[in-house]
Picture 1: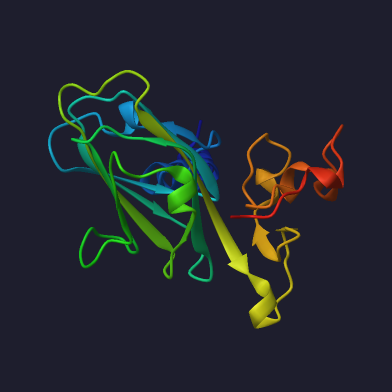
Picture 2: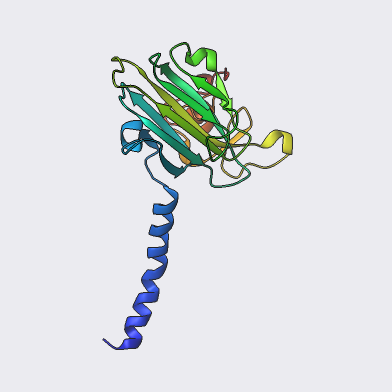
Length: 210
């Protein structure tokens, strides 16, 4: 093979290598399901970044966690919506939510044993980042933990914008990849109904977000 052919082949695979590098650096994953046991794997104050359209983050009786998890949208025009489907923390465990790329300033919420998912309701960020600070002790009882639904969205109605992905019934614009996956990403569940052309679903499955 000539040197010219080698150069041409190298340039041919360069875009693929750059794509892999982008995915590795930004933490983009096809599977949007994360568990704190895999994200908080190393020593104290460990920080991990992920760029997501949406995710389901779970924790189940985790011991000795001390980490920061930072999620970012793929556009500065998007914000995050966070909604718990389960929230049952031990009194020595804490989950703090910060509106931004770092755990500085006032947190939006500091969740512990007195917090329930109905009391917390839906949390909205003002930036395209959200930082979670999660700490647990060495004896988290069984059945403690949480299940957190995180969705990157645009609120198109106040701005008069057009949604180029999936428009929820509540006028939130989310990624079309989040529809019909069994997860209520819209907040009103319209991404899991016939509104999203989900097979076997009806529009009556939509609910009012808390």
